[in-house]
Length: 219
Image 1 (cartoon, rainbow, N blue to C red):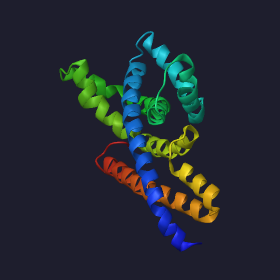
Image 2 (cartoon, rainbow, N blue to C red; image 1 turned 30 degrees about the vertical axis):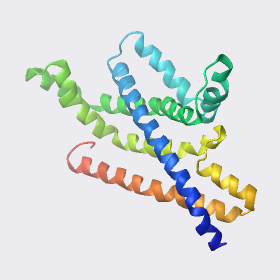
Image 3 (cartoon, one colour; image 1 turned 180 degrees about the horizontal axis):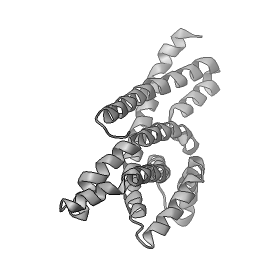
Image 4 (cartoon, helix red, strand yellow; image 1 turned 90 degrees about the vertical axis):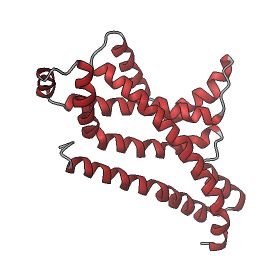
């Protein structure tokens, strides 16, 4: 290991990590919003929309993110739609993550016992109030382990961003290996950087999950 080279290369990995986190979290936020909408539609089985979103989920979950990125970055320009690599990365994560969040939240919604809705109705709560104050909080708590796992999964999926010329961690590692032939150092820094920003997020998710269970949710 060339420690001097590692010290000099750290700023490049820091810049790549900031790019990954910025694009990753933007994509995750949009994916969660889409997943929430899709899960509610499928939970209430709204006609037409429910079938449409079911098709979206199957198509999204059964195609790799790299193929989706290729379609956005290389395919859309063939029909006159030009998007930047960063926008394509965010859209790809949103498209993929939305389906995973949708299924996780829908599972949480369906885990709430019917007696909860009947009790809320007997207390005079409207359907909207029942959903907002009774069903939704328990559903999020019940599905939080899956939501947390999907967040980690989507952040790791950013490793394919280099396929559309985004300078992510994999791109930087390949660049260093190609220019300086420092394979061990490049891979060591790449793995270490992923651990540095993924491990705290994983521990935070685990802490929140434990707090929810301690509060009586998600059992």
